[in-house]
Length: 326
Image (tube, rainbow, N blue to C red; front, side, top):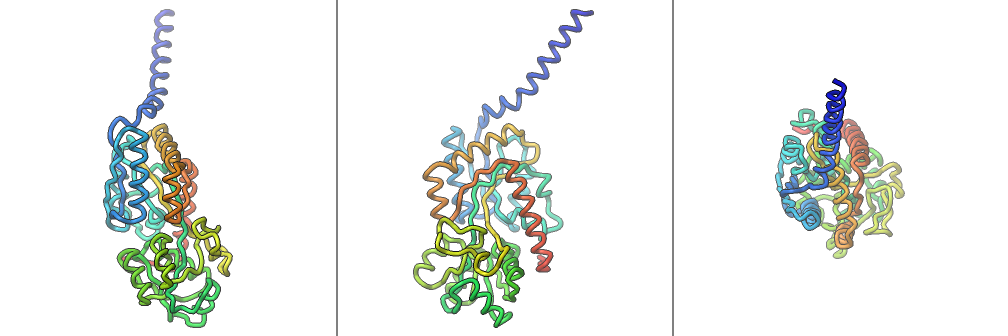
């Protein structure tokens, strides 16, 4: 009986050791087949560009193809739900932007739980919006724009890339912080919004640096400030909105990676580590800088805390602005 007990203990110890080592071994060999990177937005935009660049570099690093799968629709909800329902084995991940933190406040009946149904993998990069106005607007700075808006409440309008979009919520936050009244004009995407700003149909738009650069250089639109708490590396001489008379204003958009809840921690860690390494590559960092973005490559825990803070912030903005999507 004593020998049998000893044998049994060895067997149990061996089983426990093998079970504990299994996730590590899986992470070491991961990936052994192609990985799908679901993008809940259409091809051609900034999110698509950075996703394909990272996917290409991961493919080279892993020796397995990383396939970008565009699944646009419903403000990112369609593609994000696909990620939530995927098998949690690391072979399906998703790229999401700031709408991931905004949607819970706008859509009370989301088909997934933004926190519980996903594992945060990494915050890849952040970029500020730039406050742009049509050349006919006499303001030359954020403080002058705020003063002008206070003199003419409700007389000026701002564009957004759609109801509930990042630029929409950013402007509502700006309005509340600055104490001004502007009329919201939503468009179906940033492209149409920019065109209407350039033509003078609207007076202001929280723009993307890359999309706005040529029109700024041509003089058709003017930059008044950047939305982040610190100055942008792409425009170091441009003051932030916070330092230009609207204290406390801090808005950035971002690119991040999530995985289905239950994805092994060792696999999540490997994906995060390799994406962070890709973001440090000179050609990737240069491309991000050219787009006005800055690489991050945060840990899963760091991104999780960041996402929770973003959800709280945008929930408050939606509540205070009384925004309801029908």
